[in-house]
Length: 489
Image 1 (cartoon, helix red, strand yellow):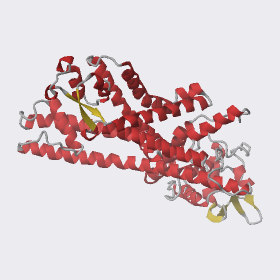
Image 2 (tube, helix red, strand yellow):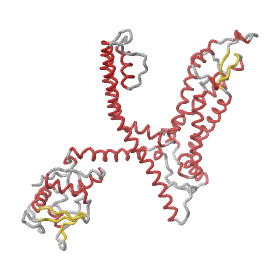
Image 3 (cartoon, one colour):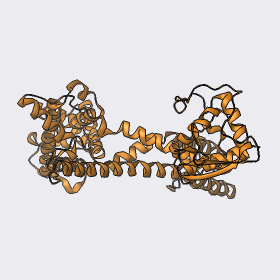
Image 4 (cartoon, one colour):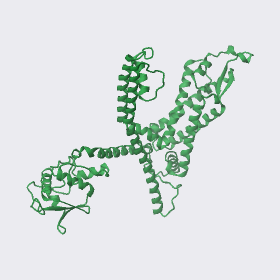
């Protein structure tokens, strides 16, 4: 006897064409013999079962207004072929028919979750009816679809403002053209070239920031009033300290007694100024051409761009003002400004899909990351406390310092600054390392799967956009050209 089917709450879209049925109505086309065979034609595939199974399901369906009620069966009855015809998915119906027979709902593994959910809703089944062995595959498909929809909604490319109406003035057309040129690489070949140029300038700015701390790009110079302003380009606190302690009394005729300072190469200074000019011009152009300037100013991409150019602008103004370099607060402020230059890395991340997808993966996988963090905290508290009591206290001087050892051991880093020396300590260290490997092994695959799904979606969208553009060009009788405006694509 088939298990009674539970109703799908809130879903009435599939039975809106059918009238409410009295529970005492009869199946006029169904053989009253419970052992007679009943034929279903589901999308061209024939299924047969006993009338007893259908009678039980139809009886419950009439009471709870399932799609498979008596009126629905009578409506879909094909008198010519003596069968019930439904234009639905036959593969999923095979599982549903088995559910009517056995009361257990097992789903096909090769079908995606959303399509299965749609069929279950039509036949009046709930997710609660799915057996545990099939739930993981079904739920994975549903969760993946939800994540991809959220990615499409939160995509940086799709968050860019769009012109609602086609501009009518020449200035409006110029703004429209410049906006898409700066924000939409697929707009034209020129926009694509500009995208590569912008990435190149961002890489040059990051290179200059890193190279300024290397002795290869630094030049020793004697302390003199002329070299003070150039010394503002120092990027380490040690160098800044040398500036603050230097006084005018050091200016002696003997060069050997004159303090020496290091300033960065003029090549890096030129690179900084060129990048500053490029990024400033880009920001102002985007601000002028934006459909909604105020909305553009508060957008995440505009804030990142502004924070990336502000340090250079402020440092340039400070250099031009020529302040007193003996002020430690000013030196700390300048060093902080130079540290903020690292924000330029986000310009590269924003323009390369594979990189910002990695960041979005971390955002979308916050549950997995939270679980991993919880495991690490528990392991750190446990093993850090135990190692303090069982090992040499001259090495593990306190429990908080033992936490550091537990973290680097569980993450398999192992700096070697704190090493267990007693047998019990080595045993605890071994358990700590093993638990750390297990924590990483349990959580990292989920992050990898999310990244793969998101990256594949980005590649799919890019491929579909290109195919739509080609199709549109053929329909318009013109050869496909990357120079053509493809905003609608």
